[in-house]
Length: 464
Image (cartoon, rainbow, N blue to C red; front, side, top):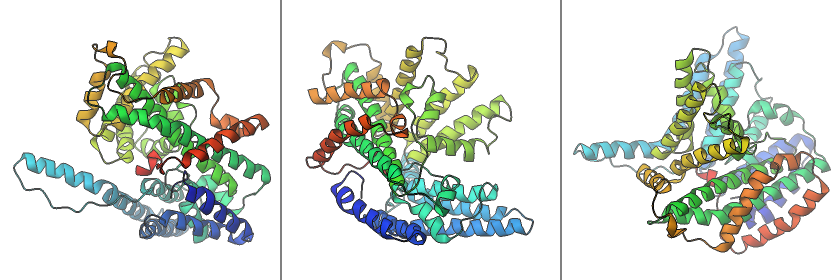
């Protein structure tokens, strides 16, 4: 089930809200858990068992770590149980196909027989809820949080459908108090509605329209340099509006059920360096990687060389987290190399000192080059596409080879105005102005009407 569908908007969401608000206060978390399990199991009910297994392991290890601390120990063995279980399950379901395929390629090159293998189906959202449950256990071990008061509260945190399948990655410490006691006000509910409407408009009217340009570019066999640049800019806009649109909807839905989630985007394409970009893009992931990977590895506390290694390793694993493909590993390495270069330049971009608009423009170009690896089907296709972007001939052919319509170009240009000319969504939603709430209504209606003329298109981050 996806947020941008008739089933969700006109049946599941209203029914869930009615059941939730009819429930007494002591039952609200249980009700939200129940409807979240229905939401998650709509496509594959058997995957609910996998999520419950992961949740159960970390809830149990959290209890054991707490008991070990009460006896004067630390519970490190139980932390290892949690880490090995979580990473083992994530590794099997997300990376087994990739590992076997890569190994078979090596076997084939050596003249050996490939290993017979039935492909594993990737459970939706496994990367997100695994990181959430792991952070719960790690934070208990580090004595940052206390174990959950009840299994239902903990399960509500893990399964909460607004952010279950594509983030933001909400840490237990963020909602710990809200699980015990949260407020439900008309102001918060109204704010949630407007946030959800904003996200749906981003997804349906901007991301899905622009996606057709990006898809055409990456499927074309004879692109001009200009067409290749238009295609990757379209993809850069698409992935932003798609994922930030989902995050807006998740935050809005959370507000409707009484929860406040942290923001996940802060105008990332206004960044002045790659390091700055990662402070603004997918904030819940970048801070998770910083706090649970980069800092434990030593961060910048063990000398310059170790800092560079830690940065590269963190970004490599961040790329691999996004998907089991060499393109994602290359994308992570690309990000890591730029962050190392910026460290060498004194924690700033090598183009620092130029006018601010130029810093933003160069950073955007660097980011777009990275998106080529993220979008391409394989490394050969990625390097071919980059080669086209930076070739010096055939500029006179314009957009030849790209299947693009005037409306799509208009939406592409409008998207640029939204990205660089308007404040962030969070600025609008921090205090809902009557003018904004009125302005979003016709766009929301247009987005709903748009649903009748297209099939349900999942959010891009569902595949991660």
